[in-house]
Amino acid sequence: METWEIYSLTSVVIFAIGLGGVFLVKHFLRKIIATVIMGGGVFLCFVSFAKRDTLNFPDPVPHALVITGIVVAVTAAAFALSLARRIHKITGEETFEEKE
Amino acid sequence: MKELPASVLPPLLVGVPMLLGMVSLFFKIKRRPIPGIIGSVLIGVLAFAAVVETSRHGTVIHVPGGWVPPLGIVLRMDPLSVVFISLTALIGIFIGLYSQMYFRTEEGAKVRFPLFWPLWFFLWAGLNGLFLSNDIFNLYVTIEVITICAVGLAVLSGEAKALKAGLRYLLAAIVGSMCYLLGVALIYGSTGTLDMALLGQVLEPGPTASFALIVITLGLLIKKAAFPFHFWLPPAHSAASAPVSAILSALVVKGGFYVMLRLWTEVFGVSLTFAAGQLIGVAGAAAVIWGSWQALLQTNLKLLVAHSSVAQLGYLLMIFPLLVLKPGFSTDSADWLPAAWTAGIFQVMAHAFAKSSMFLSAGIVVAALGHDRIASLRDLVAKMPMTALAIGIAGVSLIGLPPSGGFMAKWMLLKGVFLSGQWWWAPAILIGSLLTAGYIFMLLRLAFAPAREENRFRPVPIMLQVCALLLALGSFLIAIPAEKLVVFLENGESFGRGIETVIKGGNHGNE
Figure 1 (cartoon, one colour):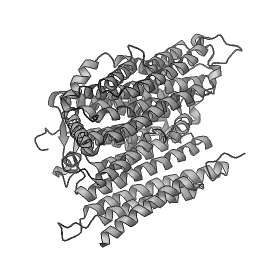
Figure 2 (cartoon, one colour; figure 1 turned 90 degrees about the vertical axis):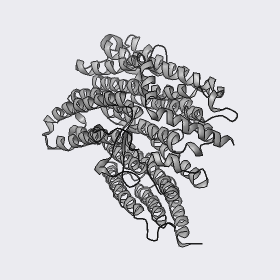
Figure 3 (cartoon, one colour; figure 1 turned 120 degrees about the vertical axis):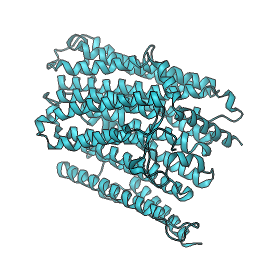
Figure 4 (cartoon, helix red, strand yellow; figure 1 turned 30 degrees about the horizontal axis):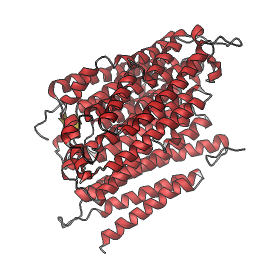
């Protein structure tokens, strides 16, 4: 097994962990962290494809894409965190479940 | 790629709204509607210029910075994207006019509206960018711009209910984007390009392409609130203020449909199978029936309209099984494909007009009554005849009665269903229409019923009612130039090429 194959398989596992997390955990913060983990998996997947047999240097395009992707993911996570914080401030709730 | 004529309109259509969004931030809060309205009209003029340009030259492209693909990113404007851009511009102008009046009413003033115009312009830029992108990573970026602005608009009121719905929407959207991005990574890894035109030629059917197709479709289905991922839509759309609900429901969810249509027809044509199309169709049929049924059970007007969105979006999904050839059919006999395309485009337009009108009318009811309980709609016809008329007309288009745009969409869809021999979709379409008729007539029955106790209807600016009524009429007017529109779409190469790729794909799936 080549190195990039290990990376790309790992990336899918990380993605799956994050995806499961979003649906299984309840707390806002954990849900947001789970989406960040999903992002980590996707970015690792991108980087693992940077090695190409036809080139004897790493393909730079995936790196550019990952940097763009990270910027977008950070923005979305920050926005989600600020929403969660505001909800907590107004209602004191930390999950989507309705209080009795 | 090079032989296509170049045009400056695509970058203007993305750049101008973005610039306007920034400029409007420099205006005093009270003055923001001035750049808002003027800017909306300006974008409308640009959209009209785009219609003229594409009807004259066909597909045009813009190569930013002179970098040609595969290294550069091309903006491509073809008739399909122009239809979406002008639809956005037309509805955007009306919603802009409406919002300017709405935020002055007692009910609308509760919303923290200063941020409405900047966010709406950024959202507009994202939508136009989405319709013009010819690069799957660029699509991801525009999808994210749209998501973040849309959630920002949805939580403008700052109430706990809206914030929770917004967070749910945002989390669902992030999951959708990440699924989409994983698919992009897989495609780039296997082909080394992100340009849609090139991908259509080089993508080989195989496990990687199939897996990419699955995750990308899954991501887009979450984004466009397809059954069973619709859970975030009703709370988010009903908790937002009226103009925002109209934007979210009429325009934002259509972005997901547009990307899916593009990718299925132009990129994944070779990897599609009959089963994949059927699966999407089942999700669509389930959404139609479930959404309409839920709408029938609601007691609040905005929730009813939001659930009806889930159902109407289901119709859009039902064109995907028709785009893939059934085993045993050859290219020559596939005469239902234009019908399926037309059905999809008409459903997008009819729903955009009718649903924005419905949400704006719901906003008027909220402004007049202070709440939106359906039971208090009694005597609406006597108190606000124009709004009652708008709800009625938009409702007729949602049901699909002739001669509305909704009728055109459903008629074409049924035609496609029967011509392609996939008759099993017909009951879902008809049951959906019946249930829709059920909840629309429920509203109208109450509107005509005499009031039990004296309802206090606060006076509402007449312009609000005019905007809602004009949008409702729009859903009828689009049926008139139907013939022209079909010719306009066929004129572009996307219509033909898309179908060609699908046919290739259908044949592959059948082998």
